[in-house]
Length: 386
Image 1 (cartoon, rainbow, N blue to C red):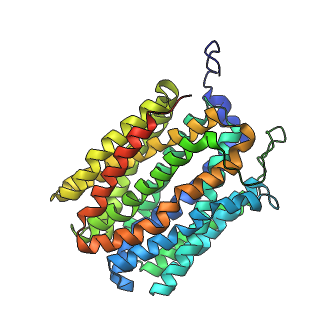
Image 2: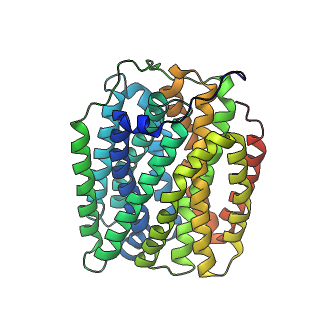
C-alpha cells in the first residue's frame, strides 16, 4: 500500500460470511481443545503416572517439536492434497494421538503418542496461518487471527471446565479418550466441507527462502524459542516448585483464557491501528520483566499472574505474520509459512532438552535466558518497515 492509498476498511460482517472463516473457526476449536488438554494433563500425567523428572519431560518436549521443525514438508504435501483438506487431516491426527495417550503410560508410549499428536497440531497451525493470509486481506487478517485466538480461548475455557469436572471421576486414560474422541468428530465434520475459492492467487508449491524475508525468519525463530520457555517451564515451575494440582492448573487456564477471549480481537484491531513494530516492541519489553519475575519470585500467586501476562503477550506474535503479509509476495504465503514454521521450531527441537538439564542445575536459568531472548527480539523489531 502506497502512502497516498487509504486503508481498506475492516468489515467484520463480510469477513464472517467468508466460508473459510467458519471452516477455520471450527478446526481451531478442535486444535485448541487438543493442545489445551495436552498441556493441562501432561506434566501431572508424566510425573504422577509415568514417573518422569525434568530431564525426561524436557526430552519429550523436544521430540514434540520435531513435527514443527518438519513443517516445511507441508509444501510437498499440498502437491497431492488441497491445503484445506490437509488442515482437516491434521486435526484427525491430533484427535487420534490424544485419545491414545493414556493407554501407553510409559516413557516410550508417551513419546510416541506425543509425536502423533504434535504432527496434527503443528501441521494444522501451518495451514491455518497460510489460509488466513490467503483468504483475508491485510486489514482483515489481524482481526481474523485475533478472533481465532478468541475462539481458541473460549475453547480452552470449555475444555478446562470439562477437565476440572471430570478429573475427580475419570482417570487419565479415560480423560484422554473422551477428549480425543471429540476432536475426531470435529475432523469428520471438516471432511464434509469445501470452503476453497478458485479465485485465490495460486501458491508456489516449492521451498522458498528469500533474502528480503530475513527479518521475518529471525523474528519467527526468536518467537519459537520464547514460546518454549512459556509452554515448557512456566507450567513445570507451577507443578514442581509451587505444587499446583491438576485442578489448580486447570482453573488457572480457565481464568487466563477468559481474559484472552475478550482481549484477542482487540489485539488484532491494535495491530491494524498502531502497526506491527509498536505492538511487538510492547510485547518484548514486557517479557523481559515477566521472565525475570518467573526466575526470582517465591509467591504462588505471583506466578499465576505472570502466567496470565505471559499468555496475553504471546498473542501479540500475530503481528509477525501480518508483517510478512505486508512485505511478501502473495504467491509465497503457503511456502513461506511452512518454512517460517520450521525456522520457528529450530530452537524448539533442542531448547526443551537443554533447558531441562539446566533446570536440574537451577530452575532460574531457563527464565533468565528467556529474558535475554526478549531483549534481542526487542532490538530486532525496530527494523520493521511496512
